[in-house]
Length: 294
Image (cartoon, rainbow, N blue to C red):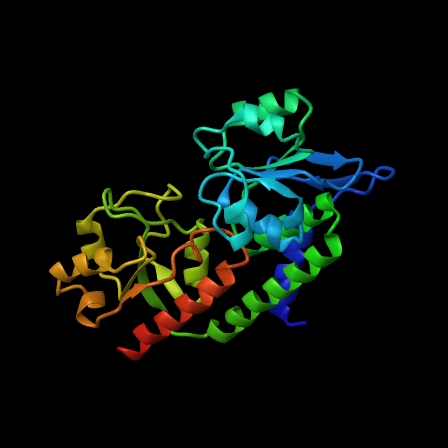
């Protein structure tokens, strides 16, 4: 095992304090540092974000998912499942009618008040909030344990982490590339260094020009981007290049002058799931193009 992989795998063990089984209980600790124990593997699971839906399927629990939130479109089987609303407007009556034995919530999107109501009615809620690659792997292993698929989930997590470690080793000594990642256009928004996208940029040898900002997804100005003069501008946009084309108004930008305006596949980097590995590989190739343009 490489040093990088060993380090990340160790992180998973730290981030996933899977408690010792109490009798026949299946226990895991969620993103709110709460231990959840089930007497039997969950067989009727509701996912409340597109990211948690992907993670459940990665854990091998897809057959147990009985409903999902809006925008849960991957894998394709998830798109055919019943909907229970979105993060802002969940249909609690519909959730209760489906008789779930586990609800998986997203701490950055779902309402704590609504989840408290579900728990008061006896429905277990498990919160997720992956912030880095180790968190993603840990989340999948936890979901695998709670749904009775721990062995498969562990194998999938190890494969994911091996892929991340391979990228880390490949680009460890790569020349840095100054990157502006555009999340939205109006208002203009980016990510700071704590956001997963920024960690993918760093994995590829990139340097997020707004890494030091305090907010996870901060608003910035065009003037601030011009002053930082990134070598590459990257976005997932809305699946097209309109946001990138708008930067061509500023030919003095290094990214524009060198034609380093890169579109990456939507949802690969924006959702903290195993597919972030695919998105990172795509991003790394784009930053290699930026290096070659010097």
